[in-house]
Figure 1: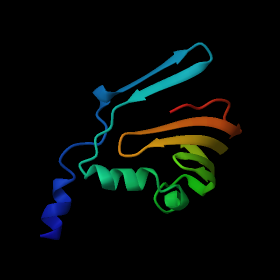
Figure 2: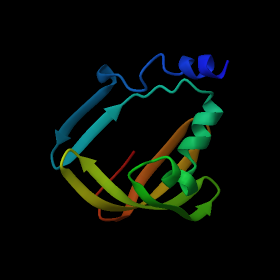
Figure 3: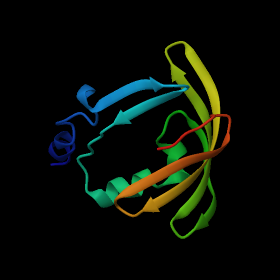
Length: 119
């Protein structure tokens, strides 16, 4: 029964090529993606907001900590290595994250070596 249930989650890709658009806008790169996760919304929310344990399941992260929390506003500090083919670069990110439970995660870069990030 476990195998059948696990197989049900493999039915559709999380991101189809038609659901991703990437382009350059001035000095910025914009990536717009629609992702589908065949899990209950509460489980998806729990994983997406588990910043303290992200190094356990995000392979390119070496450090992830919530450094401040005030209600639905978090400050998250992360470090890791971005890789694309033979290219790799270490990154450090400090982001302000505003949570609207089970609906929206807004992230804005406020420090680190990535110039500007909004998601």
